[in-house]
Amino acid sequence: MFYPTSKRSQRWDAIQETIGAWVESRPEPKVWNNSLRSHIYVSSKTRRELPYWGSKNPQSTEAICKHFNEIMRFAVKKEEVQPHSGAGKHFTKLIILERKIEGFGTAKLTVGVNQEGRLMNYCITVPPAEMAMA
Image 1 (spheres, rainbow, N blue to C red):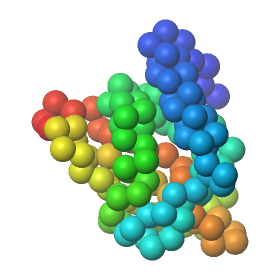
Image 2 (image 1 turned 30 degrees about the vertical axis):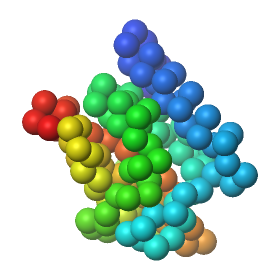
Image 3 (image 1 turned 45 degrees about the vertical axis):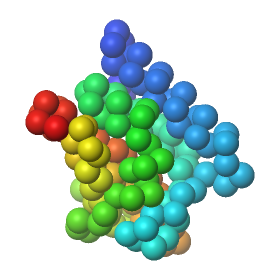
Image 4 (image 1 turned 120 degrees about the horizontal axis):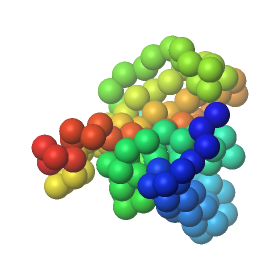
């Protein structure tokens, strides 16, 4: 397990605060995604996984903190893959979506499909090189 330190710890905290405020402002933690034509839910698992993956680099943290709702609503489906890691194995499949953000780069949204067929936010990442190229 990751134990946050230094700047990554600060990014971890920023993501947790952003997602916490987002969840608190809604009666049910979900958002409609136009591409999937379905709601994507933010669960307690999301609130654990998102800071882990998002705090790995400043670009991912910035995408989550500044553009979370936009990414969740307007990301476009690119592909479906089978889960292959420990944390993702509880999903039946993973859906990869992307959202190009003007002056920022391309954010990748990974959504897991649980046993009941509900779409759950898993992580949002941006490759470090994307920020420099935007």
